[in-house]
Length: 407
Image (cartoon, rainbow, N blue to C red; front, top):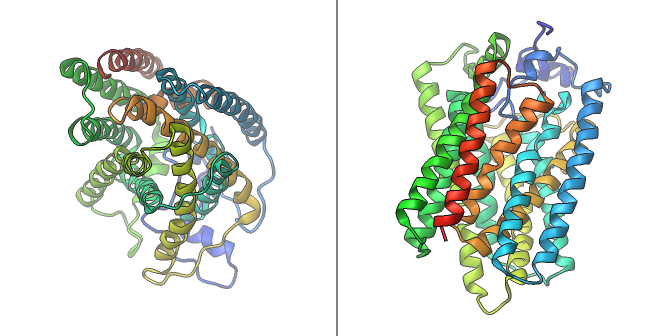
C-alpha cells in the first residue's frame, strides 16, 4: 500500500481556509473508529471536492445494497407491528443488527475520513432527525422531554466513544463499551424495571458469552492493524496545546473513561423510551414506539446544535469549514441508516424488554466485522481471521442463550 499519509490536521485546516491560521487539532480529530483507511489515503486539499475513485464508487454501490436490505427489514417490521407479538421483537432485533452493523459504510469515503468529526456529526444528526420525523405520517406528534433525554444520551455516547478510541485503541475501546452496553442494559431491565428472566444464571451466562464474543471480534479487528495504521492512530494523540505527544497515562485514563462512559450511556439509551412508554401505557405498542421516535427526532434537532456550538466556541475557536458539498450527502444517508436501526431497536426493546432486546441489538458488531473482513479487507492474517470466526460463533451462541433464558 502507499506510504503517504494525511497531512497534520493543522496544515489541513490552514489550506481549507486560505489567509486564516489553521486552528490546532482538537481532542477529537477524527470521526470513524477504524483508522485503517486513513493510512492508505494521500493528503488532499479540503477546498476542492475529492475526485471519485474506484474505492469511492465501490462504497457508494455497496450503500445502495445496504439501503435495499434496510428497506426490506423495515417493511418486515412494519408488517409484524400489526400483530404486536413477541415475533415482532425478534424481527426487529434482526433489522437492528443489520442496520447498526452497516450504517457506517459511507464513513469510509475519503472525504468523510478526512473531515472534522463534529462537522460530519451535524449532517449525520440531520439525517437521523429527518428520517425519524417521517413516522409522523403514521402517528400524531406527542411532545415529551424524554425524547430530548434520549438524544442527549446518544450524542454524548458518540463523543465518549471517540475519546475511548483515541486513548486506548479501537479494539480495547469497542470491546469495553460493547460489553458494558450489554451489562448496563441488562441491569436496567432486571434491577430497575423488574424484568424477570426465566433463569438468572442462564441469562448472566449468556451475557458473559456475548461480551466475550464482542471482545474477540474487536480484538481480531484491532489485531489486523499494521504499523502504518498504528502511526495514523497515533496522530490522534497529539497534544493540542503544544503539538507534541501527550502523556501515555493521561491518554489511557481518558480513553478508559471515554469507553466506559460510552458503554454506560449507550446501555442507558432506551431508558427514556421506557419512561415515555409508561406515560402512554394506554396506547398500543406501535403508537408508543413511533411517538417516541418522533420526539427523539425533535430532540436530536434541538440538542445537536448546542453540542456543536459548545465544541466550536469553547474555548472560542473559529468555526471549522462545513464542507457541505463533500459531507452533506454521505452524512444524511448515514443518519438515515442509523435512524432505521434505532427504529428497529426501539421495537426490539418494546417487545423483548430492556434486559434482552437491546443487548441483542449490540451483536451488530458481527455485521460490522464482516464488512471489515469481506469488503474492506481490514481483518488480515490467519490468526485474526480465526479469532474473528470463533468470536462470531460465540456471539451467536450467547444470543441463543439470552433468547432462551432472558425472557
